[in-house]
Image 1 (tube, rainbow, N blue to C red):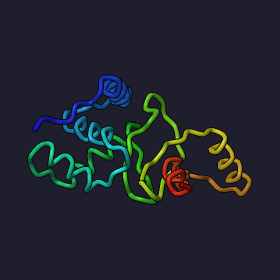
Image 2: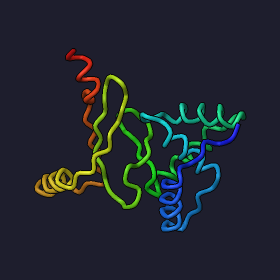
Image 3: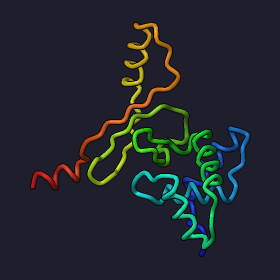
Image 4: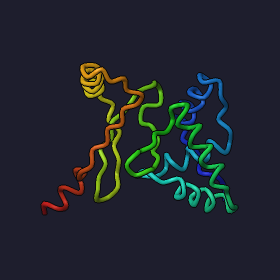
Length: 153
């Protein structure tokens, strides 16, 4: 079975991010990225392995997929959700940023929110306490609009 095609828009952005990082978007990395882009929710590394194996009709070593994911995170194409240990494609790969996430505890949907005011507030609070953050992960769990509407009916 052929690899999931990566839409032209995302391929162009991915290639630009890789080139800016002095890296190359190999066919295997592109296939992993395309599978993540095709999913409507974050997926674990093992779910990604299963998707790639099904599409490519061959076994894929977990270490290989973890290396692809590490690469995609490093160049800014993918984010890792800490609370669920899952991965989702970046909604804004055209620039570097830190994001916050809204995670639906019912359907599993995740929405990336790029909020500079939230980031600034966290950095201000940390600075007031003499804390020097290395990373800031904000994941808010709740119900997405669709699941909330379903529950209220």
